[in-house]
Image 1: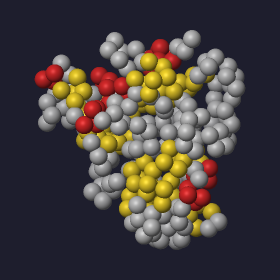
Image 2 (image 1 turned 120 degrees about the vertical axis):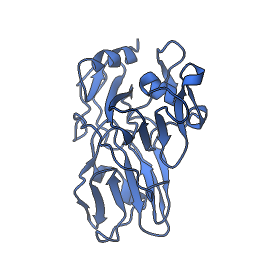
Image 3 (image 1 turned 90 degrees about the horizontal axis):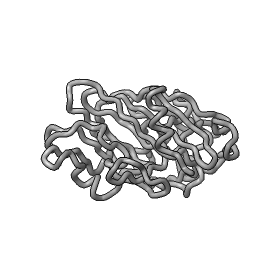
Amino acid sequence: MKKVMFVVLSLLVASACFALESGPSNKVGYTKITCGVGYTAFGIAFKTWTVPVGGIPTYGTPGNKPSDIIGDQAACGTITTADRIIRQGGNFAYRNSGASCTWANTLETSSQMRSSCAYWYQNKTVAARDVVIAGEADVTSAPDSAIVGGNTYKAYSWRDPRVRTRDVLGLVADGFTGGTISTSDKVIEQGGNFFYYTAPNFAGSLASVTPGKAYWIQSKHAGGFTYTYDPTAVAGLSAPGGEKLINSGSNLMKVATPKTVTKAASATN
């Protein structure tokens, strides 16, 4: 029996950062984001499930709406006063106080809140708010793709519950172009460090990507490229019922609270 969300919810009381649980047939986990007033960037590291009326997730049925992923953790209000979940470069959704705090607007109705994108949590209240995103820590699904245009920033997050070093991300094979620190394409942690490629090695202060954080992939060459991240590459998963952690060469770690950052006008899809 897949006892997924019940395991996660019980863990929320005990831990404030990141957890992974291994059961007979699945692994579940969560990230916690502390959202200060304003915009906090985040990503989705897990496969998420639909949450019908009653609040119990339906395991195996993908859930790609804010109502599935955020639930009632966001502050309810009007379209001008409620907290928002914003897909960077795209749509947003909020909990509508005029409709019993149900989720409304295009990010909800289009069911397009998914991994491989990056989001803003816009906190319109006067105090910080903790938001937990839970799901299946799955690294066996089909690869995720993103189009990185020429001379642009692509908002991105990695659907992977593991901290992944930059050399196993498959960037160069897909068209990530190197050069100097000024001319190379870059991966930039939103509000943080970056790395670039100068053949035959990566360089820069960002050594790995972290579950639940948001990034920009910056293409500095005219052509751009399509980036496909395959989470099954160098997966090294433990057998069901085996080790608690996924052994990938960089095992799961506690995830530091993402920073609240200021929106960059130039850093959009």
